[in-house]
Length: 471
Image (cartoon, rainbow, N blue to C red):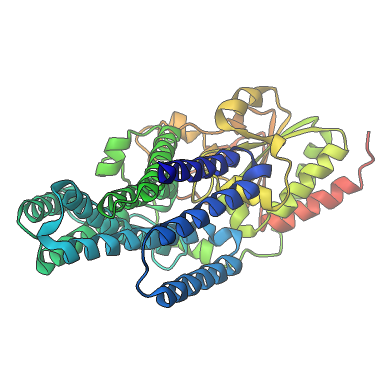
């Protein structure tokens, strides 16, 4: 009874930590609280079981902790999505190893439920591992970020899935799974995960990251059943539930059917492949574009529009992350507010390469969290707003999503920047985003298109505003 109460207390502490993630200013404490819960859980588990090689366990924990800490300290905010995908893969391969060891060690002695759970954990662990590695490589630009669709891709996935299920059922019903059966099952699952992930492009990465979060937790929960660990079951189930909810939210933000997305029916080929990768791999130019003689430079038009506007909505996108312009964005917002203007941020669920990416970037820049509004909250206000300032966003503000049929973003809810009285776009270039769909907002008469490094553009605009007397 005491052990159950201790487990419930640890799970409660973990949920308290997760609950603090609802507010950016409490997220740091939430992370520490959840980490403390997991550390206590580790101590409880080690205390309940006799450890045959305590120094080996301690060494492994120390080595893993140091490597993890070193990686976390070295990555910047632009690399966070790739690191998150890598962490999902690490959790998945840990679940795979636990399942493999338990199934091999006990052979036919495991009860039916434990054996089935171990096989499911192994399948999910292997598939999630390879899918996570591909997602991480795409997010880090180590491989092409656009979808790779094989000939008869859906049929290939169906065949791999059927073979994996058939072999898992055979291994589960036989007296004891042999190493050969487990090896083939792991290989099939790993190939299935890779084939599943390669067809998903950069624009759909938030959905993939959420889904892999869920499958990692699910693999851990099934492994918890095999080793009779309530804490592992509960923690894994919590991660699986949160990842599943997030996957549904991301699909709703894209106006896509989650089943069709997972089966590949909503996959797409973008309009181009190489240019977007070159855009990410090449540092943004620090010089601003020239203008024709006699024309008012776009930056001066933008500065005049900002001075005249009394209400401004700022729309950050992945280009802001690429330019590392989150600090300049926050400073510009502060400068506008000092001039007595009403300023808010509009955050699209798919802006970035993982859920909450823009929130993380703006939190790093110490942006006021009370100024951050989601799509549903702020979209009705654009028509009453003087100016929409787009910073490195493209697909999430593209009116073609609602006006042009049969495109990768058709039907996707967007931020209604085009409804504002005036629009200023600070993007590196006027090329389409990951979807490959031309952004009609760029050609609108009320749009001021400022091309070049967003970080330099925003710094120039802030300097121009600082020269404006406060009202």
